[in-house]
Length: 138
Image (cartoon, rainbow, N blue to C red):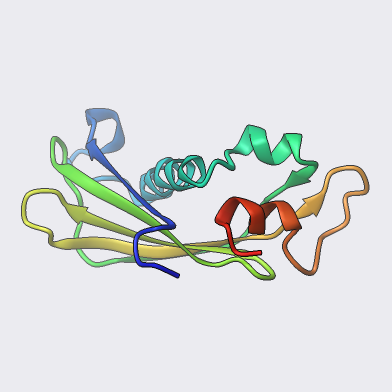
């Protein structure tokens, strides 16, 4: 894999409705930030969720890991980076949330998704060809 080819980053400003009374982001909102970056990287490879559905596959998240190093706070500009690191039998995406201005790591994690044939509901034990075509790794 060429570094950056399967990677996308988005900048977000932490909104007031995502923080607690201490103006710290509630832990569950980081998953939403991961999802925003995941959509960006999937769009970059031209395989967005509507395109997944049209290709006949659902890609549910079956595992999600997250590690908190430092909190994000109200008004802070953060960069959320999503990188596709595995695709043969599952789709594994790494995430990094950092402060936009300093580069300080705030949160990291990963998600794992598997292909499910929508017609049968059966989980695929290897990723479908359409994913390899989108990644240009035949």
